[in-house]
Image 1: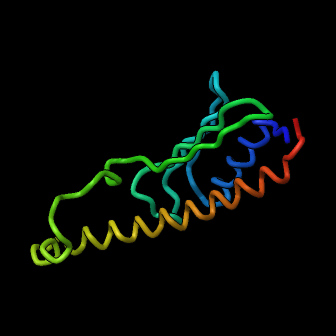
Image 2: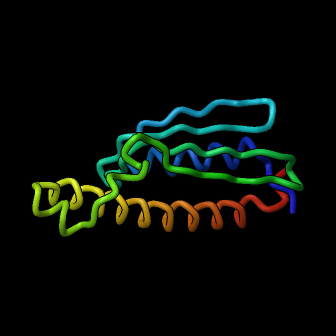
Image 3: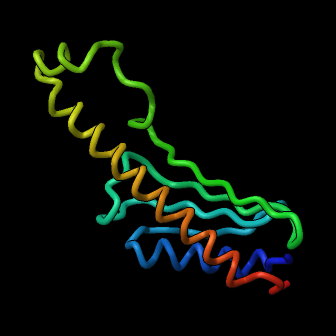
Length: 122
């Protein structure tokens, strides 16, 4: 199966537009990169980086959510945090984690469908 990398990058760009992200796409030596942030549909704590690398017959799609709030929080338990007014922050972190799981599920489902539709497009 050979997939045109530019067509795949364009499809992934449309995914971010459909989900109301602010996104930019650029071409690199290795393929294409997309950076997206600020979707009201997925309130992620940070931004998304997508990299499409390789050749039409041997490609890799990578995705990660980046940002300061994605880093590990304080080393206290949730009950201790709640007692000292940290319940709000714990709640935000849990909501962000839920949003990230939903986003990743939808994103990879979209990638799978795009790859099937673009099979032998190169």
